[in-house]
Image (cartoon, rainbow, N blue to C red; front, side):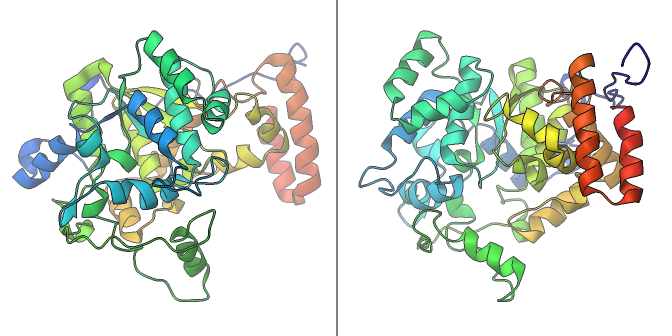
Length: 392
């Protein structure tokens, strides 16, 4: 087919400009420190000095399921939200307030890697992705199985023998002080009976027991977007910029992709992805399975989902967070183009993960895609997609 020019192998070209080391800017605009107040700058640098090493993360996971640490924990069901609400928040309470897990049990050293992930992801998958990255594994499926089976000692020995057990990461669940934001509630309640209310109600319940999470009764002042300078939830892009400037090529980003690929539709996750790309920060991706994408590409479900992403439809736990991020983006269309290049471009995060780019294999998958499109698309869409497929 390639010889007959019926199929032409092509990937999107990466034409989005990048910058070297500290030359980039956060999404919030020009990040000259003099343009921010002292409180904002202090908080950014404070966040940038929190981290958790991979060994501590594995040990933390080994404690889950014990009577004193979420006895109903289920690796196959419990999410990061479940663990934050029922383990991290209670164990970081101090006096009338609290601190981040990294401040209490982690490190005050700067992280080597920023982990971008979603709280709806299985917690075991988050831990597995970090471990797999440290060990140089192609995907995290086997690591997740080992964690679920309780083989923590074996993993710790492996991490130690390879000299990466103290590799430090910035993970929001552990490095943000939850007592200064979410610990006392679940955000404004939407109108009952709406889809928004159903989503809100689901977010305040444990995945396994379906019981509503307990509120933390601490008196720590809460800071959201109505208290921008002290808020710890609105500075991830500025913190990444600061770490890139201070650590140079020693700083990188790990994208822990969840099984439903929701990481690419969360507002702050998308902002972190593009921020790293703009500043030429090394980016790594960990998937649940290196082979899993082939089936998704075959039936177009994942391909269509990712290729139609727009930050305008990105989701956030708090609507104000989404509005804050969108307000930082001068041009939505340009941002979306950057995002597509980041995912599908020749050097994109998933450029090597999708089948269909090799000559023979691509021809076969293209034919399968054509058949799938013909079965599920209306005639106008089918014509448009047929033209697109010829230039995959």
